[in-house]
Image (tube, rainbow, N blue to C red):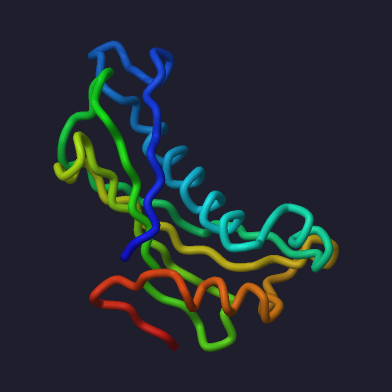
Length: 143
């Protein structure tokens, strides 16, 4: 079962057409990813202790349906791909409105960066386990 976070639409999230601004979809994805990490023990303190943090190379969103003020929004997170050493990853966020209507699909490709050396590195074992328990997409690839 995918990890799901509810998201609240604020008035400031709307564009002049009274639907969700495009950048808010990306904010919802970031919120869901970080909430997943925290809920699975990868807090800022843990990342700081290991001198590691997630970075993104690419974010892409496919907009399917408008989201308007008053709609209920939920974000479902799944792992699309991960390198064998867990250094690089790809995640998919399915953004739903009003429970079951797919409004957008957000895909991010990223990696773990050593915060002091500023280099992409394999993360510590604790992160391997966390990514291992993340629900996978049907086309998941490890490699």
